[in-house]
Length: 370
Image (cartoon, rainbow, N blue to C red; front, side, top):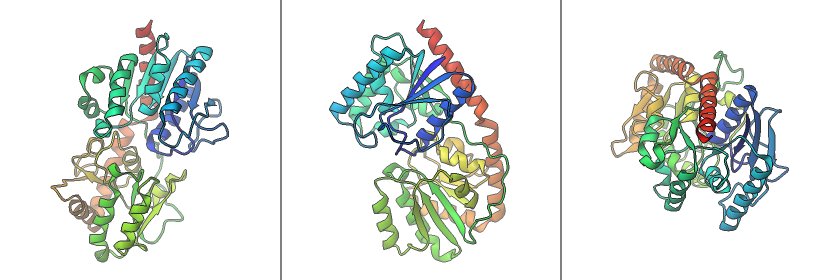
């Protein structure tokens, strides 16, 4: 099958969706499909994450793919995609995230090529973005199927969209053995990974750590991520006197070593589509903590079995601090949670199962489109 994967940006975008994009395209390449990935990146831009060498890549070089799209760029991208797809004639197109699948839906208007829209956020994302949501509603009539990451996420979308949604979880990196890291620091690390954006709520995590920092002098907080709130977060760290205890570090390809260093993984997000980094931390046997009312997190973690979920109760930082302190003070509890978490991920998110679910979806979409 000749499949085109399309995403806005792969050079500067280093989030979970981009990593999953590279992973799924590689899994389908392994199954013998003819895979081409298309971005709006510049021609000479390199991909941050690894993909199979056999996968072809086309960069359309329209506008700045790492910034907000203006109206002129939007229409230029639609026409460029339409022209490219008319020439190349793929069997099926997959668009990752609304920034790709909405313009593709208009580019394919009137063409007999099925389109799969892979949604990687919860509906909460659209609450303050009415224009994006309107475009999503309009484009839904032109899309054959959506993929979402959980039944709960699907249930929150209006029926006109959810009726086309198929639940396929993200693949989670396999960890064959939990070996010791030779470079593990002597200090204990609480790790958090994610974009430095408002919905990730790292401010709450920093504030919660500040309330327990004096009682646990051998623990530090490491936040791995990039985003527009980086300066604000560093200012908060400085104002709380935590510059030698809280560290914000950029995304790295060697995320493996960061997981192996960590004793606790904390995700303070208000909402998640899936919580890929939480699932990855669980696969390393790291005890994880998040909020009970956070979609995505509360579907991955079973409270007191595979991790710890805390209730915000109007004061998120206080609730998170109490949960972290519980994990710090009880090593045996951490070990039990970590072991159960690892087994749960191994059972439910294997590459083979996810690849098979994607392949079944693609064949069904082609069959329904005939």
